[in-house]
Length: 105
Image (cartoon, rainbow, N blue to C red; front, side):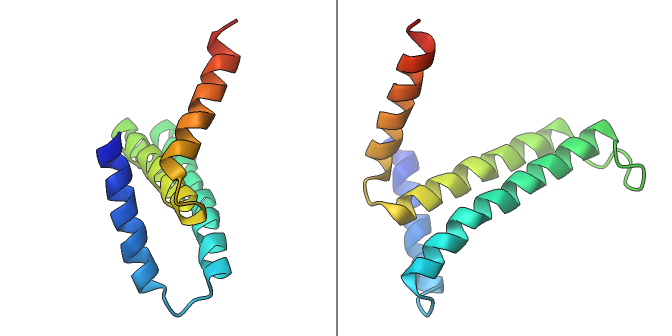
């Protein structure tokens, strides 16, 4: 998992450099909002798999859905790291909490 968070760190550094002219509060807000955009792309892919949009028909595959879900996860990790330098610890603590609450019944 360390390698994953190292990659997230590099992505945040790259994004920070690209948005250096923007106020930090705006950067944080936009990165969190980006999660909603990516979730919308998951929904679009689901509609494409099921053919539920008659105008577009069968436009996506389950592989597309998987890719979009990965984008949601990655975007969330970037947003979390943008908010806190302890993102890996925060995530691990939350995962343990949810697992304990859900699995230790």
